Each structure stands twice: as C-alpha cells, then as structure tokens.
Image (cartoon, rainbow, N blue to C red; front, side, top):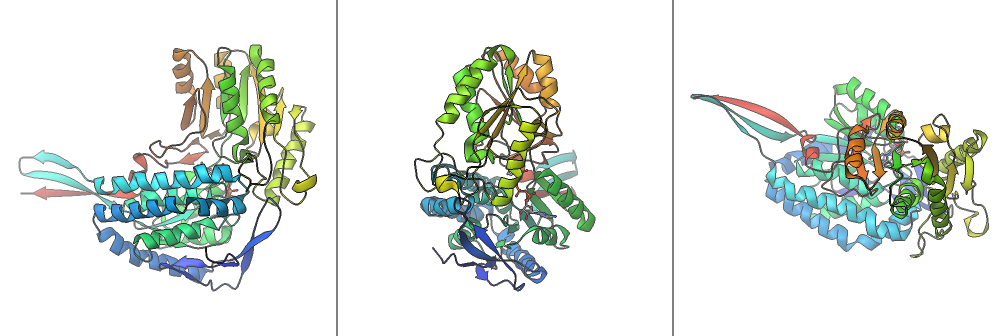
Length: 482
Ligand code: NAD
C-alpha cells in the first residue's frame, strides 16, 4: 500500500501534486488520530482533470463495448483480490466495523462494476420503420465527461456505483470523494489503471464543497452525479443548470418509514428495524428511522428491540467481533448529540442510549450510544429530520389509512417497508407509499440489479439496474431516405 502520509490527486492515470498548496487531514473517528494529509485541488487542477477526461474519453468511447467490458471485468477481479486491504483502509477512514467493510462495501462496489461490465456490449439503438423508402435508427452515445461527487458513508461503493454505468457507456469520470473519507477511492483509481483503463478516463480531485462547486460550474462537464444531503443537492442542481444546463442524477437523504402491522413476524421485524437503524451506526441513506408499530404489539416489539440493542457489540472497528463503530467524524457526532437532546426536550420516551460515550476506550473517538426513543410524535424533530446516526424513533399507529398518510407526510421519499403476513395488504400498502425503494418483510438489501433512488426530495434518477444506463447515454435519431 502506498504511504498514507500524503494523498495527491489522480489525473491522467497517475498521482499528481495539487497546485493549491492547501491540505486537510483525514481523521480516524474511532480514536481521533490523523490518518493522512490530503491535497486540496485548485481550479487549475480541476481544469486539468477535466481536460484529461475529455482526451481519455475519446479513446474510451472509440473502443467496442466488449473491449470496455474486458477492462472493467479485470478491474472487478482486482477489486476482489484486494478486498481486505481496501476494507482495512475504509474502516480506518470511516470507523465502520471491519466485519461490514470486508463483506459489503467493496463487494457491492465490485458487483455494480461487474453488472455494468456485462452490459457494456449490450448498449444498442433501435430501428424505427417510417415509410417504404424511409426509416430511422437510433444510436445511444455517451454524454462525455461526468462530474461525480460522493458522500462519506460508503466511499468506495459510491465511487463504483457512479462510475460503473458511466464507464460502461463510454464516458469519462472526474470524481470528487467526500473530504471526510477520501482514502479508498485512490485505490479504485489505481486498480482501474492497472486493469487497462486508458489514462484520463477516471480522475480524482480531492477537496471540500469548493471543489464540488468547481465541478458543478465547469463548462466542459456534461453531467453531474451527486450523492449527499438534499440541501446540498439543491445547490448542486442550481449550479449545474445555471452554468451549462447539465443533466443531473441525485441520490439524497431520507427519513424512511418502516411499518410493523399487528400480524407481523415480530422477530423478523425487530431484526430488520435493528438493521435499518444501527448498521453502520445508522449512517445509511435508506434507513427506516420512523418505525411505525401497531399499538396492540408496541410493548412486545419494544421488548424485542431493547433485548437486541443490549446485545450490540461496540468496540475497536478493526476487531472482527465488533458490530458497532463510531460516527464518521466529530462534527457529525455534535449533530447527532444535538438530536438526542432535542428528542429528550420534545418529550420522547428514551428506551435506551441517548448519550455520547466518553468512557474507557471511547474517550478519544466520535462515539454515540445506540439510542431508541418511543412514544414519539410526528411533529418532533427526531421524527421529521434526517439524523444519520444510531437513533430509532418508534411511533404507535391504529389503522392502515392512518399509517399510510403519516408515512407519506415527509418531504423525503427514498425508502419504505412493511412487515405483515397478509399478501394483499402488503402490496396494497406498498403501492400507496411514496418511496423509490420498497421492502416487504425485509430491509436494506441493495443488489446491483435493483434500481435505487428517491421520490420527492430524496433524489432524481436511479443508480444500479438497467435504467441507470439510460442516464449515461443520449439518444441520437438518424432518418434515412432511400
Ligand atoms: P453533503 O451534502 O454534506 O456532502 C456531499 C458531497 O457534496 C461532499 O463531497 C461535499 O464535499 C460536496 N459538497 C458540499 N457542498 C457542495 C457544493 N456547494 N457544491 C458541490 N458539492 C458540494 O452530504 P454528506 O454529509 O457527505 O452525506 C450524507 C448525506 O448523503 C445524507 O443526507 C445521506 O442520506 C445522503 N446519502 C444518500 C445516498 C443515496 O443513495 N440516496 C447515499 C449515501 C448518502
């Protein structure tokens, strides 16, 4: 592994020094130690990355789909070979338990690359008959240079999910990882180059929101794909429109409802609610943080949750037996602690947790206790706003119409799910829920074949699945007269 002391940019198929002279630190949130100093890109660096992408894209797009596919498949193999090494670094950078990063983060990134590698040769146009002497054919051409901006919760997975369809379709990418978790995407860049990706087709520019703005305003970028908060997404979309009317894909926040009906398998529902609130310390965009439970089973459900929360094994994220780590940063810890206080002040009943951990080994890290509030009301901040931490809010409901109305009463629409043994009710309710990703009697799986994305303010467009390829190609119609 190259030295982590300093992280450069990745432009034109190699690591290069930034010209800004500015750096920022990447911190291990489990213990507060500095992991690396990262070079912040300047406008000149971003220009250089975009120019390099423009050149590389011409070579890449001129290859056949099969040639692109072979290179991407080689990258998949290399990613899988280096799974544990990348996972180790991801754990240091994000604080996520190694049991998660080795089994999910790189695996799901590689799955997406493999899925689109397989589809690269299958991108094709149509033939549309007009008259005897005339017809139209369509070509699906790449957009060109894609500016991609990532969030911090799944750094390498987000980089893969954004790049895979873009690259398969013959585009080049300039990727800006979150400044909070910038380390592993550099390994992805090196793997892509080693796999044979032409220089310049995948570039990395490090930095904070200012570098993101350089991408969204850039005159030579054709599309922006963004993952982050809805508020940032609005700024990104305005900049993308205001500069050169760029297309956008937006993967934004959520406050998703998880509904447990009175006939549900309670153990299954409780397991899913745990996954939907405490996996990755609750830092998952699709989390089901508003847990609506039928009033008749609420006490029994709470007992099952309490018993499970007590079994959580928090500890050193590098310890393979840990299943709960710190929050990603100290800034984020402050935000989450603010919500714990708000929940108490607004009168929610605290079942467990509700505090920052400052004892023993946790003293130097960004640790918040897994927290469950119950007897919550719809107007509470902990129920309305995305916390993005290990905080479950349980709300009682009495009937189906009521819970559908309350579940939909949010500006978000990323995910939704329900637990019931009644087939008709399951589908009837799911069809009424305003969300892009829905689960019945399960929660959280996101295979490469499944389109993911949000309704309402949770996003625009989809990642993964067949439809994502349409978002990285444009249709050219050609009419022929004979
Ligand atoms: P954020 O919006 O703070 O930052 C996201 C990225 O945007 C970062 O790289 C940041 O540097 C950049 N940025 C900041 N200001 C910018 C600007 N003005 N112009 C361009 N770029 C700018 O989000 P975050 O805190 O990193 O991530 C957490 C959020 O991401 C949560 O809301 C979560 O729900 C969401 N998320 C959504 C999905 C999804 O698939 N829907 C997946 C993961 C995370």
